[in-house]
Length: 457
Image (cartoon, rainbow, N blue to C red):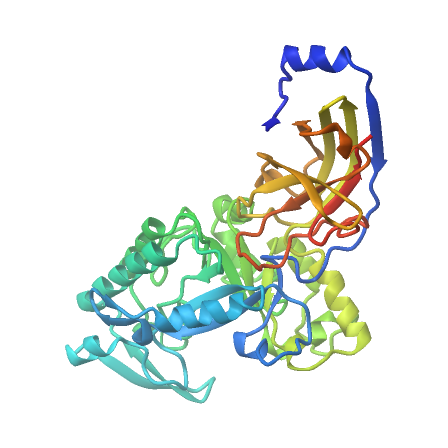
């Protein structure tokens, strides 16, 4: 049984003051949070995480799938390849970042076979920047748009809120699913088609976050306005094309984010920001002085974008040298959320206990999933004697806010558990998922995945 006491009931207050009070007040020590805290940090491709040794800690893995593998007809879907991928990632205790594509430079068309058989036009062209052939479908063909709407609806019905999925980048349109066909923008989807795809995602997904490549405040010739949708963004040229250079019509992420207006600039408060470190600066971006002249200040990029996760293959291809490895860990601790409990006050009167915690988010972003939390009393060997669910909201811990107080009134099942440790954990809905750990020295001290708050007096 758990009672929240804001306001505390007069009956419980009277009972507490009629009994002898015993109090335990602990000032909890700061400690580093791990680099593989869930739903944040650096992200390898799923195939880099296979085969045993991982060169860098992580809780997310990225992979693409072509639409042609998943869609056989307008109402005929084959989810086997998706489930195989998600299960493979989940067995490692990680969650997936997914993107579905139709065109990918250097690979055959990902347009479903039935649409090709129906005669949908596909333009073959050479991307000179990549020196690879691309196959762009006619995105504005009604058969293609209807197929995309049908796919997104089925995708959301099956996978929205699936604990194996961390984030979904919208994909589907443009090269790599990045919502451009540069330099052949004449082959890209019209704003009308983009709106239909955005509307379909908005309708189909209410739990799993959807991230868009480009923030757009007002519709223009090539892009549909998207800042008003309940979707985040991903910067795929991070720390290379991120910070605003003050150049008119600049394509860098912060430039277009500012141009999209306050709704886009404040998107991070409710929707996640992700992306990919630009390949030219993989690995070296975590050095004190990156070698590439176009590398931007990573810490400043994190601060301005409020990014939670980034693909970064350089740290996963081989074991980094000690200084680079330590630099990456240090930067990741500043990405996304970073929770610290500074004090815990435990007051007991017979079988009734009051708990008061002081909690701070010292990161740059909130935690976007409403994961449940629970308290427990456990022995020195980690055996749990009693559990108490709590209705605290971890999503309400915003960076830059003053520390928040969490309070609970607990009822002990038996008085003999005095002296046991009270602990707190956030419950990862992925059964074997990595636990969310606080930036406290007391994290995992008495039981794995639990923050030790103090002893019952």
